[in-house]
Image (cartoon, rainbow, N blue to C red; front, side, top):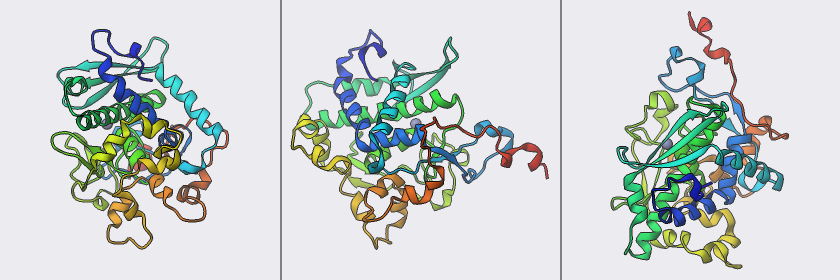
Length: 336
Ligand SMILES: [Zn+2]
C-alpha cells in the first residue's frame, strides 16, 4: 500500500519507512481488518439525517449509515482474505505527494482515471514530511513521529477507500457515529480514541465533539450533534505506549504482547474503565467510542453489532452500495 513506487522519486522515501511499517501493522491488526471489513462489506442501514441537511444538495450528497453484523472477534479467515483483495485494488488507485501549501496534516484529492476508476492523490503536508525526516531525536520522539505519520497515512487511506467505491460524494456514518468522517473514524476504530501527539500534546482525544474541527461543517456531516460532548476530552498518552508501537519485539516476538493480547494490546488504559458495566458517569464518553471497540469488552452473549445489525448480514461479501434513490429525499415528496 505504501511502497516506494507510490511516492515521488524526488523525496527521501526513507523518511516514510518506519511510519509506513507501523501503518501496515496497524491496518492488519484485528481492529484494522474489521474497520475495512465493515467499510467494504457492511450494509447501508437507515440513518437519521444531518442536522441542517438541505434537500437541494440531492441524494448524492447525503451521508448514509453503514454497519456490519460482525464484531472484531467474529471475522473469519475468508472475511480477512476478502478485505485483503479490496486493499490490493485500492493500492492500484492511490499515489502520494508532498505539498507545501496545505495545513497539516494531509488532504486527499480525487480524480477520474482514463479507465473510469476514481483515483486518489494523497497530499501529505510538507510539515509532516519534515517531521518524518527528523534526525538526531530521541527514541521517544522518533516513536511519536512514527505514530503521528502512520495515523496520517491511515486517515487518508480511509478517504481514498471511500473515493474508490463511491466517487466524490459525502462519506457515511459508521455504525453509531455522529460525524461522517472516514479518516478519524478509521483511526478511532484502532485505538478507541484518536492520538494527538504534536505541539506538546501527547494525548488520546475524542474526535466527536460539538465544536469539532473548524474545517468541518457539522450541519452537513453531523447528526444528533446535541448529544456530542461540548468540547474535546483528552487523556495523557503513556510514553511507553508510543514506544512499544515502534518496537519490533512488540509485534514480532513469539511471546510478545501483541501476539498474546491481539486487539487489546492496542487499546490505551483510558478505554477499559469506560466500558466497565455500571459506568454511567462517563456515558457520553462511552458513546464516543466506536461500537466495534465497545464490543471488545462485552462479557457474554453475542456482540452488540450482531444484536443490532443481524438483519443486515452480508453472507456473500458483496461490496457495500448506497441506495440510488432514497424515497425520503425525493424532492417531490418534500415539496409540501
Ligand atoms: Zn479526514
